[in-house]
Image 1 (cartoon, protein in one colour):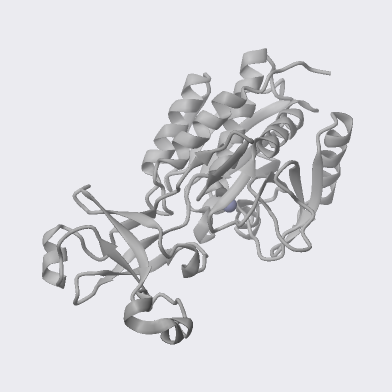
Image 2 (cartoon, protein in one colour):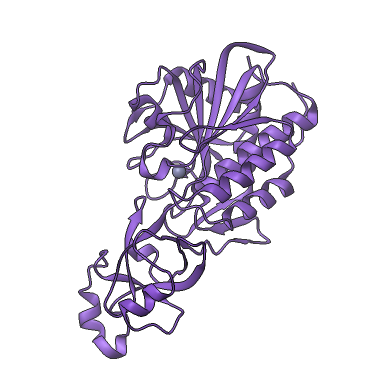
Length: 350
Ligand SMILES: [Zn+2]
């Protein structure tokens, strides 16, 4: 039995800072910088891959079966696809989500020069007083229906372009992060900033307690998971097993909840490694960590990306239970704590 302390205040602080740092897939530099600094403060050596992923290494008691733990900082977002004749912006999505889940959300457009403009994502036809309920009910809420209303006095394509806004600019959605007295964290993009905050908390708990992981461990922070190819490269070739820390999916028929650590048995890419799953469940039983084994029907992960790219790895996936994933998400501190605990026990166990 090892003794360690999980600093939940530090975990939540890191999570909130990360959530408030925009990082739509393809524009994750600021979030990667933030995580690199946090690993640096813990004394871990860091480096970047060519693709922009971050690696932080924690030397182990042994080095004959190196491990990796991955999480991703890229989030859902959008890119300017077209400037419409009325000066509003048509979007193309980054990652997989329904437009309805971002309609009404505040957003920020970042120009090539680094200027930022605020706006709101809205269906082109929104006013019930102008269009009537019948017409609005028929809306498909597709990319053709949705646009950004900029908080600028623009009414033409030319005026919007004069702001410096153009096709290809990144658009990030306001995460609306809130931590409640009752222990919930409500925010967009808990997927997977919650997982990254958990990884930092696990590394901190080990370092604070002066404990070494059983095997040399690489923390891999992925910048392109939401678009499918995140960990397809960049996991060190010597690594033999990968623990992905990403969210557990909730909803009708799901086993997971916001108060336990979710262990994924299977997602849309197939089953995760059975031996690894059994070890994770056994660690939960041994250390009395509340957990749920689950199947996520429409889900893929950086583990799937690494395997599909041909990596010869044993892969497992765990995460905090996140309600309303890829919409306005929510989890509870309990889920964050138990996920951190399982990461620590996994890292420490031979
Ligand atoms: Zn994710």
